[in-house]
Image 1 (tube, helix red, strand yellow):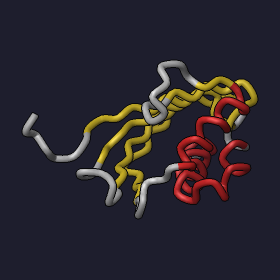
Image 2 (cartoon, one colour):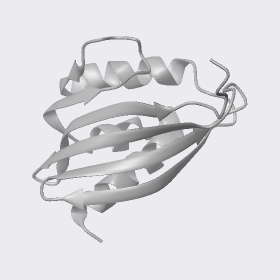
Image 3 (cartoon, one colour):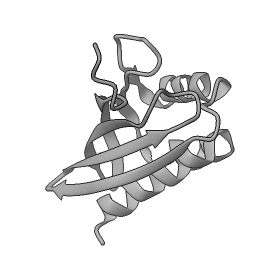
Image 4 (cartoon, one colour):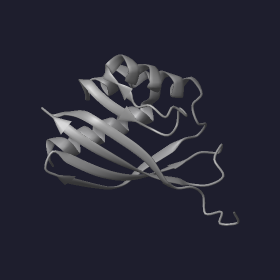
Length: 125
């Protein structure tokens, strides 16, 4: 198992634990890290630990009930990685899948870009 894989596993473990894992989560990022995610509604990425903390706290303030988060795959290439995941909650119409793209520096996440790959199996749009 690579250091990058361990960092990704620690990230998902902290995400599952929520606000009680704030310190553990933030320790995974470099001081100047970039965090881009679709959940907050902000078009701008969070930059640096303080902004990442604010983004995470906002999400933790309204958590998904009964959330289950599974890592489907992890691929590490050089100083980067890609993970695919699935999230389920009673508040969602069905499973949601996403992709995380990581960049690492000195064993920590220097950039994390989260995207939603698909929503529920509802194709009646």
